[in-house]
Length: 69
Image (cartoon, rainbow, N blue to C red; front, side, top):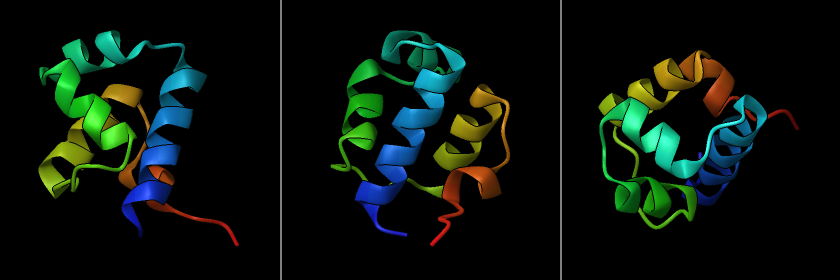
């Protein structure tokens, strides 16, 4: 999956759950800067961070990464 597609999905799920970037970053225990870079597609998302994002959003990693054509 491209970084930009993943970034868009992360941002969309965050907003769907009603979290600000600050709230999600705090829940994940990462910096706001890192989350911002991820959501803009400027940072590669390692599996460990992807798992943290999914857990914090209460979804599966498959939901986060599955692109429907």
